[in-house]
Image (cartoon, rainbow, N blue to C red; front, side):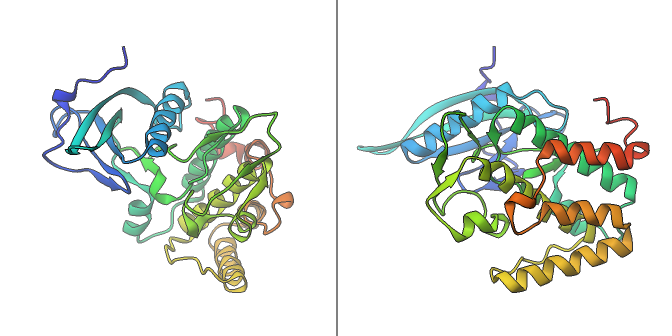
Length: 286
């Protein structure tokens, strides 16, 4: 039912996007198809298992702001007599652009209604994942996609893990996620971390992404703690002037240095409903 037809993958033609281990290509007619295929080159058993995990998570997600996986396939590719790898093909809906490209093109700040709509949709997507014990672990503008109507979708669950109730802690390596958006409590300490840190870590990365969207500022965040704090505070002050204190205050909570002070995704959704319900007429009951 979900097996995609490899003959329709336009792998030798136009490439829509690139990633660390592959790219995104049209599925069917490049001009008219509403579908694309993400191709992942798995060069190790770990990569292969992660790709399978991405397929399983993608197929199981059913949320209006998460890019759904609708098909998959794979094939073995041999390069040398004793060396081979698998190509994983994941079919999904075609989007217009990612959030980084969207921010880079904007010359005028979005309206408060547009910001709140994006904020709530992504917070709801995060809440959906977290309620199912899934931590995304790589939230950033590149992994948020927009369709032709500028509806946003959380994508790329290749780094996601299911956090089990009976596991108190997990081992974290420096290779997971994207360093610039990595929460300070994980960036500072590599090793065993409490399972709750993954959910609060998603909130941190989400907060940095929203700061960039609201300020239209894609400058790289500093890797020095004090400089990064100053950078975040400047962005928050700018957002308070452009929009209002209510929006700046909730964003400030998302990027609290202490993870215990950050809200869970469910609390963020509740805050937005209580304070911006008049701007969420079409989303609040989705």
